[in-house]
Length: 95
Image 1 (cartoon, helix red, strand yellow):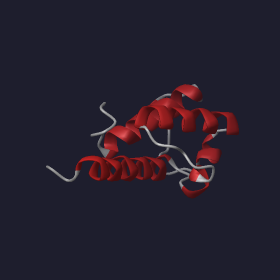
Image 2 (cartoon, helix red, strand yellow):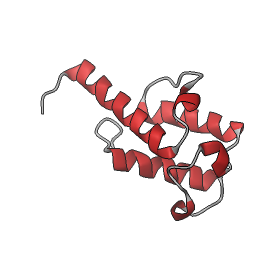
Image 3 (cartoon, rainbow, N blue to C red):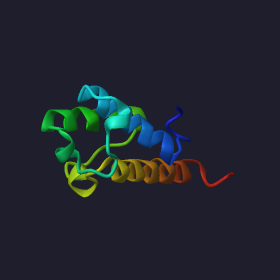
Image 4 (tube, rainbow, N blue to C red):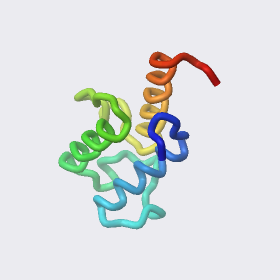
């Protein structure tokens, strides 16, 4: 997956796979609409997720990011929107 051109589905899959591995579950067992804390995600996993998002997608995660976006679906949409808005700012909308 190229983070600069990743689709919403690809980002959601990346998030689901990452969290499933951390929680020792199968990706199919993850509910992308459930609050992350209710899914068993603890604060250490949130920190790891934030660091991996920063490294993979190339933007800083604000301290309140996971308070604003608390499900896999919400995080995926926020990441997708941010990545694609950065692309427009950096290179325009040449499509």
